[in-house]
Length: 244
Length: 365
Image 1 (cartoon, each protein chain N blue to C red):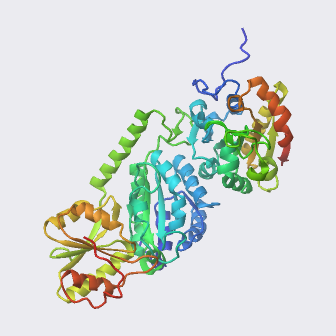
Image 2: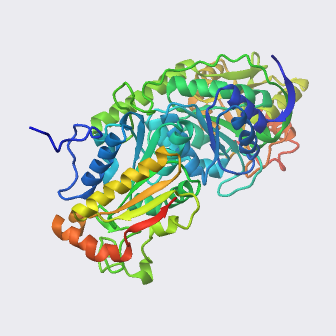
Image 3: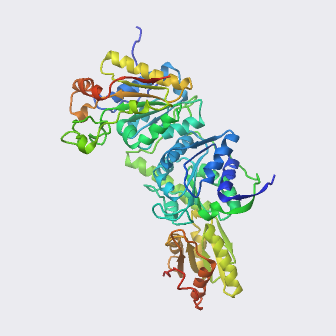
């Protein structure tokens, strides 16, 4: 019998500990598939964040480094500068990349650092219990804005792709919303392209994945997908922002 | 081949780093260490190595973390306020058991302070500085020659112990011009780094990590770190003594303050006062055993620092109540003068005190 679906070589045997329906598992698998397809597993170094994906090093079959909160782009820079023929990626959530690590991501992008960044935006601090994130939508409730994010007190969400697209350094920036099979395929193509840009030496590439958090959003996985489509995409429109 | 040159301590650090086969430098501007990133931006590319000016001190130490994880010799330099920003990264680097070298050209503090000399980052350097139970092996040069020679030593210690090493200077040591022999009599050992995250070709994957949610595993790491520090305390203590053999009073000072105290020893000897100098070279591990032995033979101690009294605590721990420990300190960028220290020396020996009103000093114990 022909095998059409299995565990990609880019993943270890460890079982994902993520919540049911969470996008982290999906995003991990997409990266693993891309590493296998590009045959780069044995020369890739991944840098994982602080947040729900803190245990990513358990799951990826390549060398992995656990970074301090927000510092993954600086750590990835250190690796890439001394090993320019290796493939280096960082994987970061919105708290990690868009709040505490804003300086690191902006300057890695401005330098055109030849790394790949996968940015998981689920509008919340999932691991610490659902606090307000830099990407929490206006009006969205969290444990630190229980009545909904009020821009008078808490400001507005950061649009990272649009922000980084103003810089000359990035070679590729795309935001995707993998809420259905077509969106899933698009997201994987974007991740693959972000790795290919690095292989071609074109410099900084980032893919923002609009993600769900059924647990902190207190929704079923299917409801959460609908919420991504109906609410998140209004503040964070999918699209290609840079491709050069 | 010897090459005698006149240069600043900061510049000698750069030549020492190159001699140590440092692969990568990541830094950020801050006075009084700016000559280091400036010179490194010239030297490192000349030798085909990496120089990168980071967007912050925080980014610089995390770039060091990445380069060290990749198995390369990496360093960063800064001055007091910038070193504070690196403390998070240093805790991670120590916890991940990665080698690296950090140079602190100390300035006056606390806060933004000033760009004048200081030694008030001693606690931060030798007691850990960041969160958790870890230590930095800490070396204190007092001459431009030592700035050059301590860099290969620092990198070797870092690799041998898989631990960050701090070279603790001050604005005087960094800025003063002295002749230096740029010799190449270093034995640069290459350490195998099978743990490095440099691509898993032909081996199982490597992970660099300091997250251990199982308390037993986390405690194992702590025990391993403490065992390393105990070994370093047995093997790596270094100090310099001057006129200590018959000294009834031993001055204890490091870095540029040690230089000043050597002058004080000469002045005191001219007055017939039996005074010597013990200069700790390794601040961590600290020469506690030697100080304890001197205390037990009857010597008393005067600790001199450009701080309100930090190293004096380690001297007191070493003496452990067996002798007197006096302290003289200046702070905020002020440098103690030989005359004011000599005045303290005379007071210890019961002599007249002619400058005590001017010397803002206090006697302890």
